[in-house]
Image 1 (tube, rainbow, N blue to C red):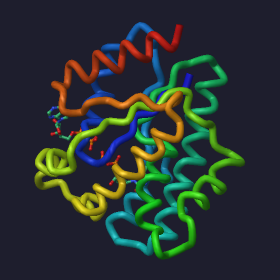
Image 2: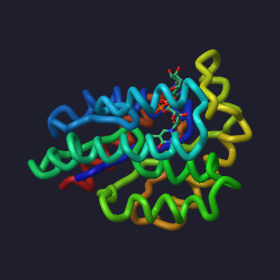
Image 3: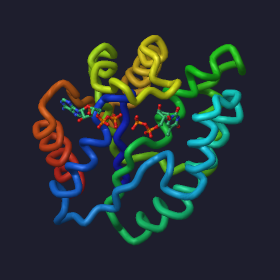
Image 4: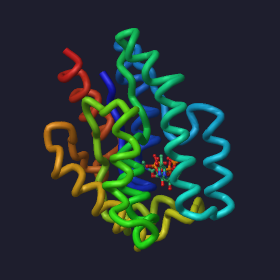
Length: 195
Ligand SMILES: Nc1ncnc2c1ncn2[C@@H]1O[C@H](COP(=O)(O)OP(=O)(O)O)[C@@H](O)[C@H]1O
Ligand SMILES: Cc1cn([C@H]2C[C@H](O)[C@@H](COP(=O)(O)OP(=O)(O)O)O2)c(=O)[nH]c1=O
């Protein structure tokens, strides 16, 4: 089973995934992330740091996804493991849907077409939702160029549209709840579906 965790910067994804290590220990899940599960992530980090043009940056995120699938996700799924990924393809649709706006026509349609021939669609996607103002408060000093309030508003709008389009795959998570409650809710839901 492939489970993905999505949401804007500061929505609590990394904290949630840390908690899932203990909460799901008996399922022995493979816990992974995008970007950065393979060496391609180093190129992605560099492109973020250097403010590369949006098409180059997008294609590096896509390359990172391809390597992640080939070297981590597909081998684990083939062994019947539960895989939990902190960010995955919906991050491209939500974020690059914004960064490619006005750069290429129909960015999300193009991104879907690029992914379709090789990606593995998640069985279950948790979308951590909270007001952008709260996410900004949480992020404090650690600011990358994506973490601009106006951009995050548009990214979250894209995420919510993706969730509305696939209600059977997406589960919305109230990211304002205390960390323990968020983790407990998500772990219970994964367990229920893994049966
Ligand atoms: N449920 C929560 N309630 C309050 N603060 C939280 C919660 N979850 C995470 N945080 C805090 O918010 C900040 C951002 O969380 P993080 O997990 O790094 O978000 P993300 O990985 O989505 O960017 C961290 O300082 C973290 O301790
Ligand atoms: C995976 C992915 C991340 N991103 C962005 C989201 C983040 O701003 C940045 C780094 O991701 P990440 O390391 O997950 O940051 P955070 O833990 O703060 O959420 O890259 C994309 O724009 N597209 C993508 O496909």
